[in-house]
Image (cartoon, rainbow, N blue to C red; front, side):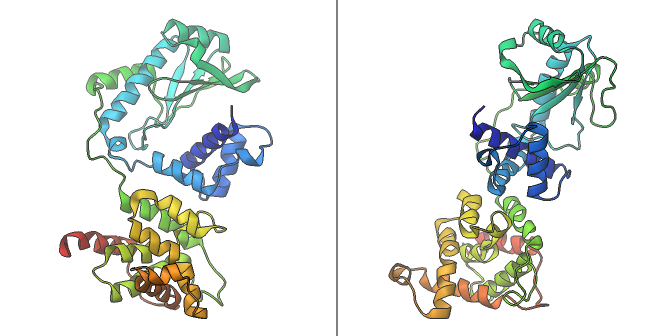
Length: 348
């Protein structure tokens, strides 16, 4: 497996841990995922960055309409039932299949099964699953092993020696239970809607909330955490440009990179926001540090001064400079999002 593939695999597992609430920060999730997937010391090129984990969070967080579609759940159940049926009569259960668990396209189906590795391979082959597409991803240790099965949905099969108890409780399904459920909710072909797109404000919220844990030196930012600072900048921007959606989003999102990669906050912000913001909002965020320096020294690159957005970039820098007041009154994130969303129709 290439280093890029290993890095992507660890990033995806770290994102699952974060979404399920098993870990609270990127560093802990990355370490736990690496320890679980690769029981050896990793090369630095195999360790995913916070930004790579963030990308996986987008994919797994259910932001796309297709990931919320009940037909996707029915298809996952149908695919899983085929595998469980192929594994019979070996005891086997599907994990994380409860209705309150958020399914996302691309998320792995996890099955626990009792039996020897060769026996399970034979049952899968007899059930129509190509044994050449099943490979061991962990060395066999103490009778436990793990397979990865490629097909309609990615599938991980965790094997346990005979006599070892399988998981039980909420979110654990047997083949019989799945067959009964499919009789009630039969699977149907999924057809993506033409207008599927990420919920931009859900992504913005995901990027902004970690800023509550980012605290700068008090002599520079006496107001407190970076999220509180961002909300102050938004309030100041709203006083000057109450009608400018692109400018207000720049006020709100200009520091989101600090929650991803503090070494390169601007580049991280631009990469994370991607196509969810306009070119003008992107330009304002990119040039804000230069404009902040201009407010201090009076020096400014000629290209920025000639830009039609020069005044707005400088205004953003002023809001960033002035949005550092301890105890200042600000709105909530939800109120800020509702205000910006309402601008499209009000100022059309």
